[in-house]
Length: 185
Image (cartoon, rainbow, N blue to C red; front, side):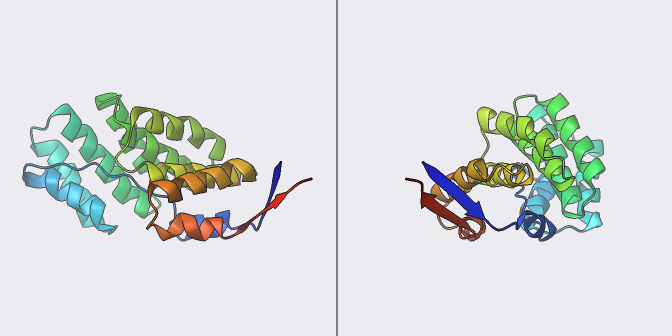
């Protein structure tokens, strides 16, 4: 049986914005595509949110692209720690397209940002079950949630899964380095 020992770094990970975001790619030109690119850019400027809002108000979008634009605007809001605004956008995305895994995964990340770790797990799990473009990010977020719930073993295995799925991504490797695994006789 393995026993896990680790240092507490969850608060540091959250304060550095380590919770991962899963954007939705929208193509075809126009404001919705610009919103998608803004979410992918890593920037958090309020003017980028306005582009997303304008896309939602002025463009005729498919259900997927409309939900994706809500997700992308929610990501921009998360980057500024506007948890309530982001949650509202992810709720709208779920209403628009209930099978969009990224909407659930990001809503789970909002709960992590709000330190509501137990509340994040159903959404993170549903996002994984529905499928997301970057599952490593969701496993990473779920690991953060497990750490917040003092479940080191589950956190360890989710960090491992994130590394397995995205071996070049440093964030889960850094988190795994904090763990010490010992064999119990």
